[in-house]
Image 1 (cartoon, rainbow, N blue to C red):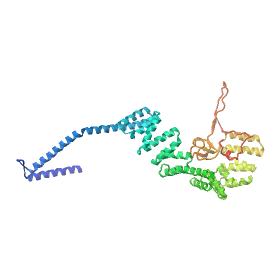
Image 2 (cartoon, one colour):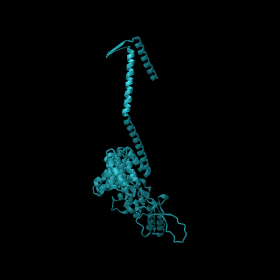
Image 3 (tube, one colour):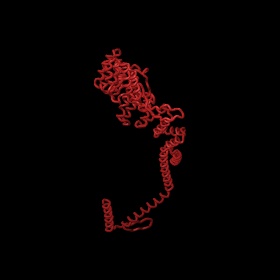
Image 4 (tube, rainbow, N blue to C red):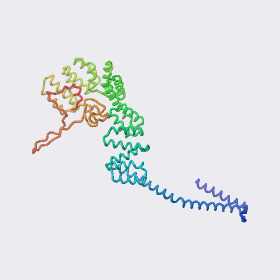
Length: 473
């Protein structure tokens, strides 16, 4: 509507101008070089407009002729760049799909069309990698690193090469350089944090984790467990080096992050005891037990009274477990202390009536010891030891990645070196294939679940041993 209105306004102005010129034709006289021209003013204006339009048309024709070669070359270059970018994109897709021949062909085409090595080096490096030429790939990636705009792409490519080669030393240096350029890259942060933790560079790992949370690369929920583990690992190192006050502070920070983290509570109690603050250590463990009952807590608790008689130690355990005496760890701790004190009835009361799922290897061994010590009944003891062979395994410090079992907690798995994967849980059972029959004999072989260790009555280990308590069946 507005366009139509504007059009009518223009027409009205032109009509009004024509009418005004008709009513006021005027007269123009030109004398030039002996020539005399007389005309009306309106006619002169019309001739002027036509002359201007004719000149403009001639100018455009001349300009078109003059710039035609340049315009042709520009359009040709534009088409080449379009074809080059298309080849570059298709080449990246081919590299991602693992089509090495197509990736190499498209890399060459993109390089010839674009004639810009900064754009095609990454594709060329990927194509060289797919074709089994790591030297050429490294050469392309090194060239990318030298350019400020493509340095990050080159570094990440070199990082992947170092990962494939298993060169963690070179990978760590590359990750540190890439992190300075792009600290918000999840790939770089995860790689750097993994390498720092595997190298036990706890201060640097903690700084990386803090920055990752601040930049929202990692969530606060992810960071809580990592923080508790790092604080505890640092506390263990400080305690081993004799820096008791520092170890105590770090253990307290770990508990402040995760108030149910057993290793931190044990270290905190040990450092308080060594610092002459035994009462605080006792109170800490008594408050901690209802949150996370654990054999290590019992061990740290009894260390406060190393010379007490067995009956007094039983009373200590009863006081420690008073708030959750029916919990399985409480009952096992009470039964073990009662056996030491030769209170057979107390031991039997805590060991009987358990659900089948809670009758673990430790319970079976304690029952075998009870039958042997109370009644000298070797046959009954043997029954319980036989049952231990198929009983549910006891919880142990188990790696969630590789399933390895360790006697003590550590921030890194001793088998696969994974960080923050060791937790207190039942280890996986081991399926053992029975011996094959002699040649020519046909039997039905079945796979049976067997514990990793089988004890006899004569050499049954002490069920109250701290290491034995943490071992998987």
